[in-house]
Length: 76
Image 1 (cartoon, rainbow, N blue to C red):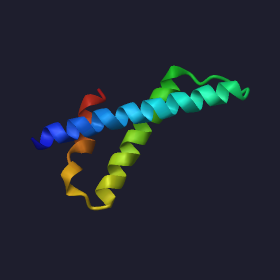
Image 2: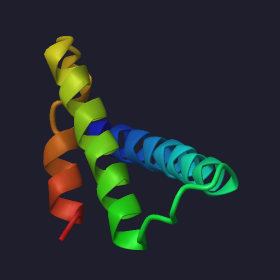
Image 3: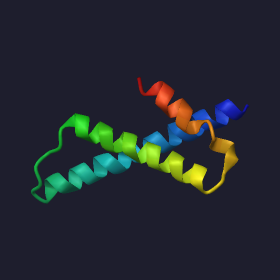
Image 4: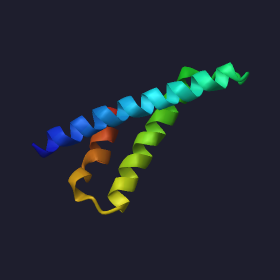
């Protein structure tokens, strides 16, 4: 049950991070910035995920302790 909760959280957060990153990219292009390569966008999303999971851990929420480990395991 715990593992499913973490997977659902990761799925929801990856969707949120992806939408936000694409929105930023779109706005940048509309305002004359050069397009970012897809690899950079993927790195930004990965960084957002790692930062969010680290922040949750630092705040002391023990329910998502394995979230960062699960994220690293699925990144390969």
